[in-house]
Image (cartoon, rainbow, N blue to C red; front, side, top):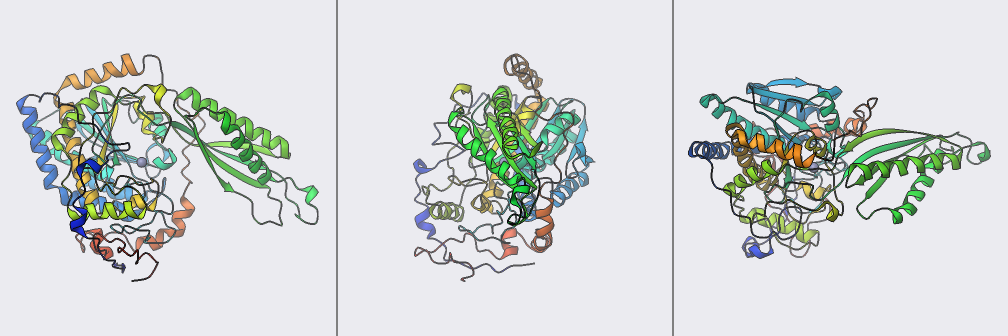
Length: 556
Ligand SMILES: [Zn+2]
């Protein structure tokens, strides 16, 4: 199924090439300092196998591209990743991996294992996307494939394809070299809801794991260790219950659940002034009643309570709980709550990060061409951001940040995993610097050569790190030494989810029920098209003309 895309004038490529390296920005932060010196190379056999792995990943770049494009086209929200999971687990199954499906009571969760014995390497990445972020790839302004539908406005379509490429390459080497070890791939289901990883831990996914390697899209190739920046969170929905009545005839007989929601929100917004600067809290009203002439008997509000450590997250949630009870008291309603998700603040492993960083320095950044840079500058201009293009310089190994300097930020439930087994997150450059995140703009690169090259670079670093873990027992030993004697010396993992909590697998079902049929028409068909851009008929790159034209909807 094709779709007609308005063809806008391509921005002048030549002028885009003058972007100085000095203007480039990478990763999630500011201008990177000079990369630190590489660690000395390992034994010649290991280095030779790592080079072979990187070459084999390069040779698989078409497979990587197809997987990245395919998952992009599925565009599924958290807990509804049925097509995505069927497709990705299916590829691994065809390649000899043993699959366990519907893991931890989550229909879209699975894990895939191959090999035997130690070390066991867990290899994960998220797969869900963002509400209302549908966007044509390669187009540097808002132009949804389907208006209102979800889309990969976070780039979670690229990580598991990267992991699969790396795993298939290393599996071949392990077979030939008779290397002991187990590869265990798993998807980050419902990461945008931080909805699954605590349940994976509870079900025992990481119990036998020696090292956990995670991949997440970024705007540079990098890795870090320690606490870093960011938060953990607990996600709670408060449901208020009142009494309905005719809102005009006998309003005094009603008790409005919506009043309770509004009073709780007002209370929270006053309290905000007296919370720590590192907190982040936000809410959406998930049920505001039915219609104005009926006093709402049911209403609910969904909060994310974020803080930089476990104790402060709990404290924030306790304030929320108290405020909900107070709002119920003020309105003569009742309230119940449900935990919809949770994430521990992340703490990444020093040994594994250093090992991976040495490989990152070997791999380096992809070579961007004029079209890639033009798309990046096109969207940066569109969003009135500095027109820095794409990352052209690796950043340093991040790490050793004092937790007191952490002023908050996003969360990822890989944090829970990081407190159960030595873990790192590989960031790979499939996205564009300067974008808002959780937005259609973050989808525009995700089925283009930028995403494909970024995932291939990431797969090289990942495959090489697998080989370090498989071939050098010191990596595993030192990683656990750091984990036991530094990271968890004074802090022990306690899940936010209580024994009675269950994964919130009903979330997003109604949205996908609404859009699934329309979306199916745009699933990528690699048997007919070399790329998803080709299938959609998108000229790469498409950006606004200098006079700003071509932005209006439906104007060719
Ligand atoms: Zn993410």
